[in-house]
Image (tube, rainbow, N blue to C red):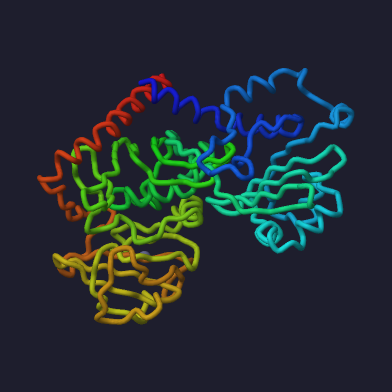
Length: 443
Ligand SMILES: [Zn+2]
């Protein structure tokens, strides 16, 4: 119970925290935290991370606000946190972070040991600087990748640079969101990384067609791993558990690692979520999602009219084999344009039409695995706009792919049941608690 409250409060204050922290660092002269421990200290040494709550309390006092004149008078160094912006050049960045002494500028531009700084200015990468009020660089910490930072320091012999491992703080985050327009609009609003949204779509790919099945009012909760450095998210990890309420129907998933270290998602009662068939042949992405929701309905034709389902999507969107199969046709066929036909087990075949192009090397007789590309969305053949025409046939008879009952998953082997229960029980309990608190907050 206690644990859950902690997670939720951390999570709820994340956005405000970030804004206040930036503001604080701009005005403070105290080195509140550091990307890594100082030079010469082993990576295991205690990181100087200050607890979030204390930082906020300190800034809340207007008295700590110092004008630059005050700081100059005190000659106290200024710590500043920033990040690389999309249109930054080395010059614009150095200007913004107040590095003006020629020696530092030359070092950062030319020194081989500082090369990572000048050559890896990727948007979003955080950096922390310590300068004198006159713009002389004392120290710079720049995050190179998810695991490393470059640290530049001024010493008696001039500047020195060294790559250091980042000290990451791993957290488990819990977030909930409600869908109003699209999954990505909901995840953006809740500050959930795209990578988590994609994992959700993947976990439920045999249950929910994320391009067609989502409805306004659908809700989800997701528990996932994240690594932070300096309060900045640097790495998103695995989804540990999730509950998705789609059109009033609740689906839950928990991650289970079997004794052979294979990780898969299961329902709380031990049914695998990995099934023989995917619900959708279209790769779900930020682009296909926005496109479908905005433009799908005018193009949607009824099942009765042409015995297939049309997925409006931008040209080039990846089209996937919905199940393991043998390719039985690759080529042009009348109104279908470029079409691929796959033969699956149990007499099931699937058809993918109007493709702009085929997956490279795809040929008749080839085996293809579930999720592999068969081709890319186009508008070849009789198509009024870019879309995928998809058919599902059982023993040659057309079935509505949106309604057809798909083969069920292989259940968890009995001998793993006890191990599964032990691992999943806390995750399931957490989802239950969250469901309770979500309901309470909506009342
Ligand atoms: Zn069609």
